[in-house]
Image 1 (spheres, helix red, strand yellow):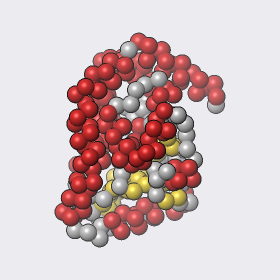
Image 2: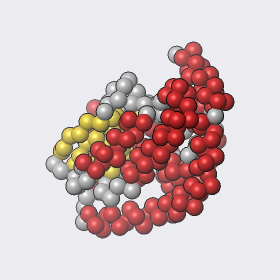
Image 3: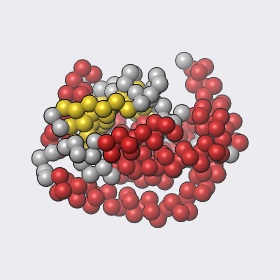
Image 4: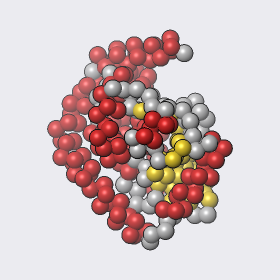
Length: 246
């Protein structure tokens, strides 16, 4: 589900879960476990297998699983993205293909983002589901004022468009992506580990404070909307439209 390799003390985590690395309960549960297993690595590179980094949440599982599945899924989504966002060591995303919705959030949770192809963006509203608080604040930290347009006008950005708003830091040819990501990760290891970890905590403190303030009021409403019968119908219609457009 998540393959781990080591390059001179840098851990490479590769999402390997179905054709597009869709985020389901099992993959999200595996993310914090994989990060804990490489806690002593000098840095982490996160990438995907196949043609996608991650095409986002497995919407069919949401539609079919109903409230019982969503009640487990949303906390797992929060924990996976927050654990990646707050990992104390340097984390570089090597975005090898499409990074959509939750996949975009996973990339945004990393310290630096390199991209070699595909599209990236937030498609939650197009699919008819609200934005959970933790992913929203991670995205706000990553792109700042560009967030409103990303959320409210859901579309897919090309790598060039993503770089223009700071969502991607470097564009790389596919055959150079991993090498470039390892190089950037190595560059982030210049500072002592405790110094780097403190800087990350300081930089992420406003985002964490917004999460903590918003979640008690926002999360019940998010859960209710994700679990509703209307959302199930909307997701099925959205998935059908995607199939027709292929």
